Image: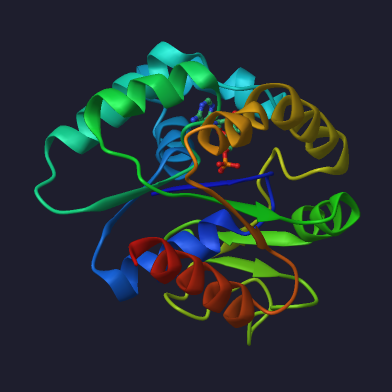
Length: 208
Ligand code: AMP
């Protein structure tokens, strides 16, 4: 299964929960790239400029990362943030049988609000929203006590560019999976639990 949707559509939040409840390994390309940037690895050094500008990191870097992660896995997995363009979707076909693509649909203004108010934990990557999902103690992760920060690409100017890139490069994937008859559009607005329920319903419907 792949999860599609604009930045801020809730893919990461929903992917985490799906993995916990369905016993899948979560691979988040965004988290892996941010970790590489933090650790100043050769990959991180190459990726940073693209990420800060809201652009996609070159395919060869991301595909290398996915191949490395997936090759060490034995059970099922869910990748958050991948594929982001047609080349990546074709590469994914080489290593996995994709039989469902869930597309999270969220209004653009809601996306901008979600992203500029988003704060992430430096340690465990848990995500909060300053108003809709605040932490109990300001600036501190409820789950692990880690320090919260605002991603450098979560500013309004960068979000607009990320949305432009999304429409140009990632949105065509909906058509790609639709032509195969495996695309399901899910309303990604409202409470996290409700969106999760809609995704589960889509999975069940497809299994039958
Ligand atoms: P995300 O956390 O998924 O919003 O990703 C943050 C940033 O990481 C993106 O804006 C891209 O710069 C980069 N990135 C994440 N996944 C990919 C991917 N599959 N292909 C290219 N760049 C990616």
